[in-house]
Length: 218
Ligand SMILES: Cc1ncc(COP(=O)(O)O)c(C=O)c1O
Image (cartoon, rainbow, N blue to C red; front, side, top):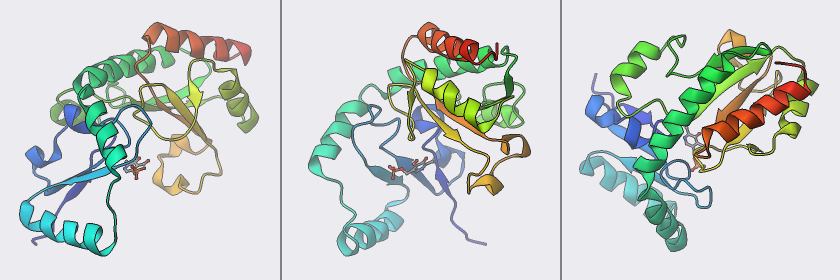
């Protein structure tokens, strides 16, 4: 019916997946995340046909003033040079961490498109040609306070929102999260969103392991 399709590709990054090549009209990328990659600048990009982008540019930049600062633009261009190198490390680390989490007794579920257990795995294999990205989610057989204590034990992984930084970031989304309706059933008791960084995978796993041990979850 002539509708235009726009895909937010932030979690995958263009290294792993290119929605326009798969038939979308627009791709949106939060440059704040993987493309800058260092957690120190904010920006966004819309990729699509010039005829549409000219309209978007006039509306958002001229009329609304959504114009990136030169310093942020410079940081993002500088950071973006290493995107392929970083993504390869994010992909490899996240897959290793996801597989490790599947072996932990206190973990109730692991959601990562690179795992065969993920219900979107077959589609992900077809359309994510570089890898499956650095973001995964997991739940614990634990109550709200245990989730919070688990995070407080972490030394390498930082408790913070956002994703796609060089360093590992974890955020606890509790059972009262207002976006509950967006999540599959198994997420409803609370879960972690984990943006696996580019540190040595052994260090990330060791950090998780000592936190699991402190809460008797191994
Ligand atoms: C999927 C996705 N798209 C877009 C954004 C917005 O990014 P920004 O903070 O650069 O506006 C976010 C932020 O978390 C995101 O997760």
